[in-house]
Image (tube, rainbow, N blue to C red):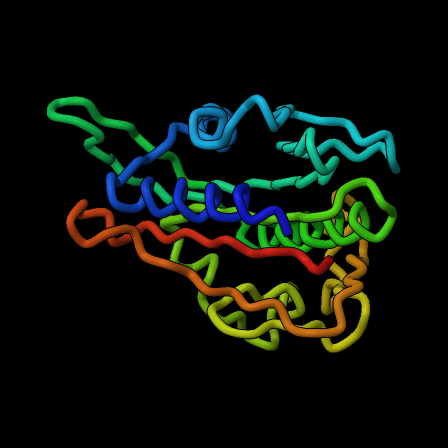
Amino acid sequence: MDEILKNAVLNIMNDYSKKGIIFFNEAHFQSEFAIFLSKTIPMSDYEIILEYSPKFKKYRVDLLIKNKRTNERTIIEFKYVVKEALVEVSKGFYINLKNQLAYDVRRYQIWRDISKLEDLIANGKCEHGYFVMITNADDLIKPVNPKNIDSEFDISSGLKRPNNTSLYWSYYKEKTWKRYPKHVHIKKTKSYEFNYKSYSKATGMLDFKYLILPIQE
């Protein structure tokens, strides 16, 4: 594990929490993270690429960081899922966040990102991976009713391990199934720990939580 990079990821998200940093959208989150990272780690030793193509299974990834000394590669996938909120980011300056619903599909997309990172590590396209998310959508991360179509894709707090090596929609729903493949393959045999951390109480942003999920190596 690249300890410098690991600590940088933790420190950046902790800094966002303390300052109550809120983003316009996911692309804003990704780009600001990359810029902040470039100011945090010694760029003489690292290379950063946004929207990287590893030339494997037509994958594109949000962010690649390469250690030029050790050749270790780390890939980070981001998610920024929000519900409607008017957020004051500085005195008199607001961001009007719009609802991003379809939480069943978004949970699916999150597990798909995890699966993609596992696949890239297993096939030697990177050595380390992180899934990083910010959300104020409590309904996204609350436990999923076992009767729901996306019950397999639960991302609520705690240890999560698929019952099988594949996650799938629990019953047929033509529109959803047509837009998204049926199975998401998970390689890891141990559970992933979904440990959501609240934004700092000092910021008044308690509705916002963040997740840093290291991916199986």
